[in-house]
Length: 130
Image (cartoon, rainbow, N blue to C red; front, side, top):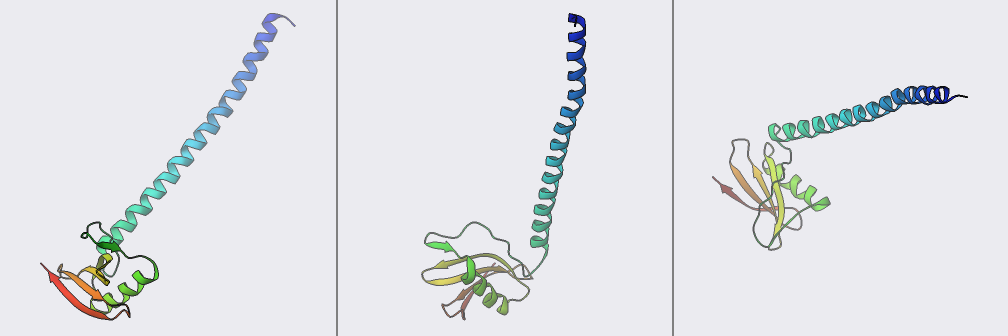
């Protein structure tokens, strides 16, 4: 085999593998873009639903010193008790403060309400905020 033939053979293998490599890379990038777009769309849709829909949960930061966020089964029961009093409200945040469960709500008319719930999940007090 001459040097020219060896060089030609190497060029042929490089050109046949190159489109395959580009095809694989393109497929990986395209797959990543599709997956990223689907994730972004899902997050946007959930945020829009929570902002527009009443009776949903829209957690916010905030709170005061000594208040801890509620999660899990306790949070679910506090939400149920608070929304029984304010069925068209949106839950802003849930916390425990000084041994009292608090559900911070935004009522359908835009009024902010803090509903206090005891350990048996009975509403024990309410505080309306402007």
